[in-house]
Length: 180
Ligand SMILES: Nc1nc2c(ncn2[C@@H]2O[C@H](COP(=O)(O)OP(=O)(O)OP(=O)(O)O)[C@@H](O)[C@H]2O)c(=O)[nH]1
Image: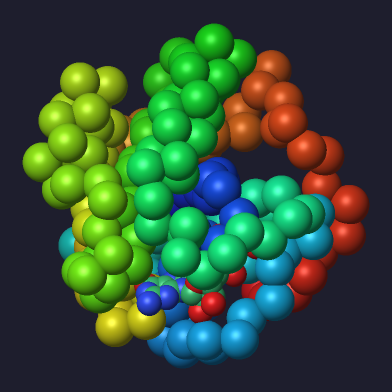
């Protein structure tokens, strides 16, 4: 069976749930007391998709050192940060980059500030994958990664981000966790 390696890099504000998404995908677990990522961490997971094996090489980056109040983690501000990341990726990333937007914590419906329609419209405008996810309740996590792999043509396993010429704002120092 053919093996494809797909490089995935998670970017976004601190506390939005990047590590939790990775943990749900790789380990199928959720830790409500998960520590903030320091630098970056790396994990892999191989799944069968149709007649291919897809090996995801996943880099999980740190949002920022200062952890904001829990109440701010699903707010509009995180959406603005996302738009800045997309601008940076468009400017410095490879031309064939696949961008996927995860609207995480969709289980917290009472504190939602970014409407699904607005996020979807934005994603459509930049031709990005958009999925509302919950790492906590295991909603759409596998679907997010499957959709990413569907968007990358099999002849081109280019990274969704972090390709040649792209510089992370923060350079990774040491990994918080790793699993291969
Ligand atoms: N309710 C809910 N909480 C979540 C979800 N995903 C993550 N969390 C919680 O949000 C907090 C931050 O999660 P992390 O996975 O550490 O977030 P992060 O984006 O990796 O943060 P940094 O490592 O600081 O960049 C933790 O308390 C998680 O348990 C989710 O889908 N729903």
